[in-house]
Length: 476
Picture 1 (cartoon, rainbow, N blue to C red):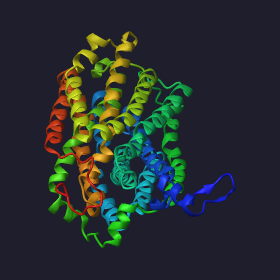
Picture 2: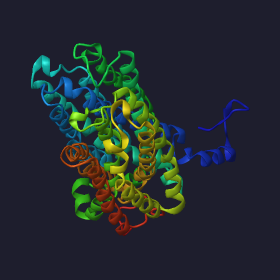
Picture 3: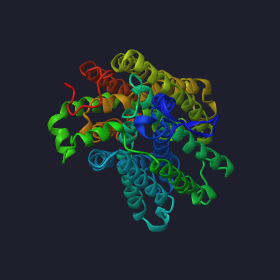
Picture 4: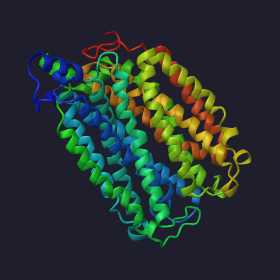
């Protein structure tokens, strides 16, 4: 209820109606600021959990969860485990999508948050390979799979919470709030790892296997996620259902089997959405997970041999540009449309991929103490700026492709199948390309994915003015 601060009481009559119409509470039932906070905070927690694992997969897990041996092979094994979550994500999108389209967005978002948070907490309690042998990587993979299930249901729910409550003409701007959770989660996860690394003098180039960091300190970021989950639950429990979904319920438009419905009637949207998201995913995991492993790996493992803490400072600065350009892309997508904005950005991604050899080869950028730090910093800034521009509109574009009664399932499947093609394989393939060819071929991989995204964008319709109150697909 709107409140008159000058009198200390609730607004009455036309004045109250005007205030409610202005801030959207008349239809939404809750302040719009609470919706923004719930969509932003939930994805921040989810991505924090995901990045904590990604960082540990590069700097910690190869040392304590896999058998001692070749450094490059251990890193590849850790990356393969990292990819297990991406296999789970489409399953999570089907599972949570079913309930999201059947019983509502709010309850499903709470379930996805709990799944992700509990799995992350348990990882912080796991014994290592040196304590229980092969059971350690097996349990780690299972918990990673559970993380993927949770994230598979989280993103689409948060995107729908934002888009289905947005003002007319402002959907891309509203939808960029959950997207901001990605860079914020990254900053929290990796910032915490950086603080712990410096506080306990952990040296990634010469790790102390008996030191505090590899013994117990690495567990703290995983265990602390439980506190963040508790806060996120408090915010989400105070939400109401989105008005778009409530109208679908009132009009008896829900379907019994959203999965079957989306494959039968919206298969075209599934394919387009998957490939529209492809280049974004490839860029994302090249600029976060792979570049970290490439930079801190020793020259003998075809890396640059940069100390972990030194490189992470550069990466955290780059992430600030990622966060800054997410709202810029939301504004551009509302102003000029989804297609024109993303076509220009995807073209820039093709060109950026073609320059990797110049940016990152050891001959060009140096190694270890001889690293050309300004060049690496500029590479990260350019890549993260493009990341913010391409990632920002996606939580508007994918939901807009699907009708209300299958929107949770459809947008979630497209987003998460793309995660298998564009993210699960990317760190592994990039590492393999560096070991067998050159770092330039990693850029060609990005350019190829960006061309596929460009083709999909050209084929796809413009959805800027499409009504979300529809039970049809692209032709609605």
